[in-house]
Image (cartoon, rainbow, N blue to C red):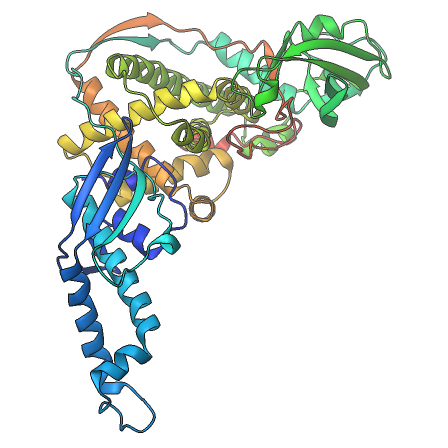
Length: 510
């Protein structure tokens, strides 16, 4: 059965011993904790937030104190007494401070280890507990309070027999030819031009954004493919191709651009900023011929037919990603239609980064190029809180469904996911695994595995209707830059240059 939500829904922060005990659900340091008698008062602050008050009675404090003294007495060293022969009262007075700290810490750890089960909490973050503020009183009970985010409680929606439209398309020779031209374009020559840029040209430009006389962000020598829209992490400039259609290198054009509501800077949300774009250089693409040397660079292909077969395989992978995505979107809409419960804004902000990372892993697994990944990530960032809320509600529902149907991950699942990512990136599976572990993304991969298996369970009992599918024709170029200077959910997006080689051989092996 999948681990508790504390390992799934959020990326845990560094915790104290007491916090780790709560998230460990009944254990501390890997050992079962002896039962501690205490009273719990839980207040429902919101759907996912609880305020917990714990009261440890005096009898338990005295019991812990006597146990601690009993362990200390045989080895206590006091002047004028042989080891272990000093009177209990003297030992107590001499080590009062140390004993109080030890008992307070042990009571906290043991209580927190049992709170989750006793109060039936399913934590999804560490408790907000100020350990230093907890006092062990000389008389009466010890009390402490903390706030905690928990998995929401809800009834599972109806999931059997859903009606789903399934995107369907036969990959045609025309699709392969068009995709081949785009790949060749990436390896084409960039020829300097003194003419105004047209759609498809690559321009190098300096960007400057101001608001009320303040420079809010800048980016120099940015490479941009001229398309009708220019996408940023927190804004979108429509009519970009027309804006620079009459500009030449050295010229500056400007336009107003509206900052989106989910931008990192609250004071700029919904505001219009002035965008100044100074053209540094204009370059036109001249696609190369598919020569034997170029075939070798693309992955050691021996013929154009073998190259096109790999392109076809890549298109099939992308079609499968679109199919999974659209099916999943329909499943998610059906599952979350009745999920009217709200999620804490702080939880959404924390999870925004994880949602971006999950999306990027999916795109990389399916062999999408860097430009497509940038466009998709910018699209998510532009509506990050709403999209994260939907994704997190979907996660909670799928997680509960997985638990009820005993859907679990296995080592072979990770091997397959890592193999798929490696085949698209050109790295070895060992290096991919090491990178994921170093960046703390293995839990994201686990979510991907469990959720995909759960979606498979749902779709195995769904009713499908095949509908025609058209590949996306990009009308925007995505820039890894935020107009207001920072983004919600920072994620390193692939930085391969537009002219770098693409290894299609790995695709053909899958």
